[in-house]
Length: 452
Figure 1 (cartoon, rainbow, N blue to C red):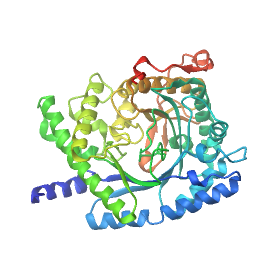
Figure 2: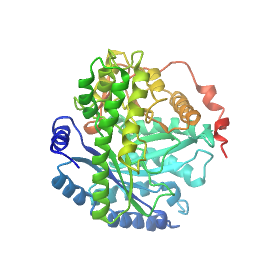
Figure 3: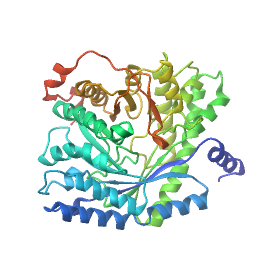
Figure 4: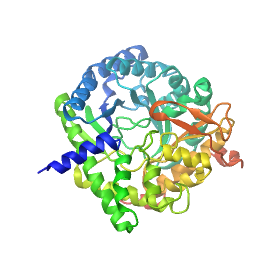
């Protein structure tokens, strides 16, 4: 039985503590859109997305008004485009991205994910065409997001793909130099990518998913931070328990929205993603939570331990609230999208090396980090390789979304606006990784992958 106090607490969480549903994402299979003719394939893609998602935005708006729960983003994810386009006799897949962009505009969603390829063990011809198309595709579209999976715990790390993605990131930045390398903010390189992630830019609709599905991503860093204000000086046992209870309430709200959207749209409910997703707004920061635990600044010694506690407690509270938890489900630490992270990066307290250490214990990885525009592709590839190694060895999802800001150097700031925020340009090591990246081949899977 929900009592009056719990209702008032939830209202306060929404009204004063930035609690919201970060995204309702509809996953759509495009496997039946395959065609030898890329023009016909594009028409099929547009028609299917437009039909399946035509009521998504209006239903979400109805739920917002009826339940008083803000739903910040309505999104679509689709089958990795390299799979859909494998039969197409075309040298470029840019037109597929344009069809996805047009369809997402028609249905009114803010992003569409799935201009993607899965190359953790090798490339198909379609994979190579898609990756080659990424810079132009992201430059010509406003809503399309792209991801490439280059490693898994079972396959190891495809270093040829890692090298190629370093080059692709640099090309994408150059293609959108006038907007600060905006294309790179819509491009993620994964290890152990999941099939039901509702968050952008890495969402795609996996081949093990149903024809159509509703996945919901909750948020609530501000709520957790507010709850910890009552725990000053308390031991970490109390801190963890407080976060668990808060995560339980946040997840319950997410499940309510997910099931209601599923019912009204006539589409199966997939998962609730528990990830704490910050925004640039003051009071909606994961960094603030860590500092509330006693750190002078995020990035200082103790940061990784604090983040490990937060991530674990969020998961424990969430799985008690929903039997369908999935996606990434942890604490996001995107620099540009978190006011506290931005503050720490500008002060020099937070560096890329420390962020890498933090990714060992959280979701997802090095996220929305701006680096000097002249950073070599081999350096970016080496950063991707390091992050992939963390994911492969620890059997977890890791990712890199890095922006070599065109024409900018350390200390300057690149602005993207909205939820993407602004990123201070952070230094990278000047030591060359050319010879390391040039080796290519595959870094073998770890022994721990042999579990059968």
